[in-house]
Image (cartoon, rainbow, N blue to C red; front, top):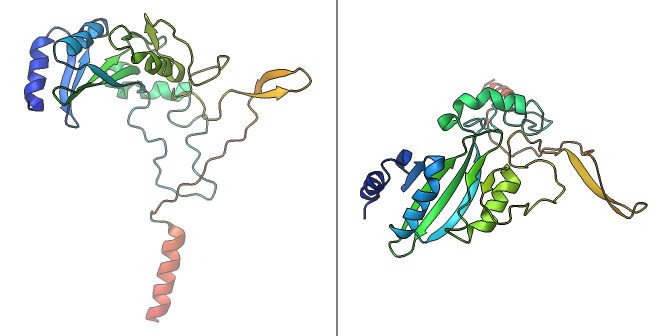
Length: 239
């Protein structure tokens, strides 16, 4: 079935449940209302045959469209936009300035990629959390058991809470870790560091003492240092 025809079926079936729908990157993309998301996902599994949850991930749309490393200048000290506190996308006060660019006005979203093996089709579902301060969406572990670890990962890295999850706890960072690393207001060098203290006989947490270090990407762009040299060489040749 053509993607456009399938999208029309979705629009008819979920007419009262969707805030937005479109074909993006060759796949149907559905955005149900947060309170209706579980019902839509269950119907996609049982009525449309999307029996497999291929992927689930969190997204932080703060500073949406702002390139972390976008710059027109080269320096000898590296690119530090991703490390400095005032860099776009890396400080709470900076993030708030770009909230108007966030689609739908919400900061956090959960994206589900569903696969129908029988029909060889895929569909993308995006659910925005209504509250930016405490992003909460419903767990889909009762629909797809494989969502268990995916939701724990999104909770760990983005701080998105999945209501109804049977065991929502960190999965990648330490249980005593502070913050959520993939939030764009989380500093790249972190808040604390840990080490083993032989005198105390245990791991201790201390304020981070790591100096920010950013590798300089190998880029090709117009640089006045090389342009001046080339112009002088050309002028000498003509003389």
